[in-house]
Length: 358
Ligand SMILES: *Cc1c(COP(=O)(O)O)cnc(C)c1O
Image (cartoon, rainbow, N blue to C red; front, side, top):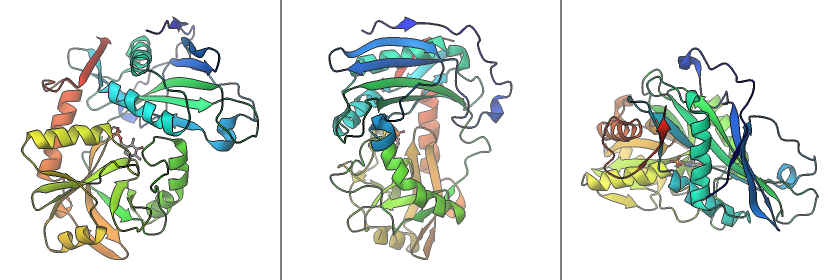
């Protein structure tokens, strides 16, 4: 158990009057959780303080060598005003896996969950009330040693901030166009594809910007060696329903193991679907599309839950999916997962962790 010192703000910010204009990750709550690491003390000085900037030396390791990891999860407000989390232990475990790869000292999963729960309770009035809106939670760890030598930092800061965010589908679920990236890559065996680290994103921004200029929502990444097999999209895992079966890339080091991905796989198996975690060639997916066997395609991630895909473009070849509409199974997955998260459906899986009454 962490002994968390709480210092509340004396000048609380005005809460957003119109929750429909929240957007994603643009405004932040009144407080943040902070904890430091030093070699002689371990993780220490757990505290909740007013949201504020960090004073950092310009020579900090984080600025130069990007030794940093993060997580992303949400707090939901139910109809009876319970504030709850969805599988926060999975995020805590994944942050340990990221930490291990990036030579960052691990935070015990219980301490990670306690930090998130305590901060959400302090800022519970910031958890939005409107349908589909939630409190996005961003835990992150960064290296704070001062100096230009390239080696693992000795000192770190763990911080958690929260952003009330609007419904992802404020205008209804809108299927997206996806550009299959055949030049740039996101990950390769031995690299950091399975970690949630800022560096993965920094390296992927250019492809995303270029695709956006051409009217695509995201890029679909192929494997980094042969550029032959599908891996994931921008910040989501991706699944393909072909001839009744669901295909998705295996989490063998180059793909981010999404909490949404694994939850959806469990639901699909419960419903009797065959789920194949396999390397699937993009050529086979395009062929299935042309043969009329590519029934549904959707991204999975915490922000959107599911994001239906209506078009894939690969080297000038295009396939169109589900007549531009959300597929039946995609819709059922969306309704089931959001139902559990917002407490409209019973939590038969033990995925929900209540925080407090709002
Ligand atoms: C966070 C993330 C995902 C989705 O993970 P969830 O736990 O489902 O939110 C997928 N791909 C990448 C690259 C990510 O960073």
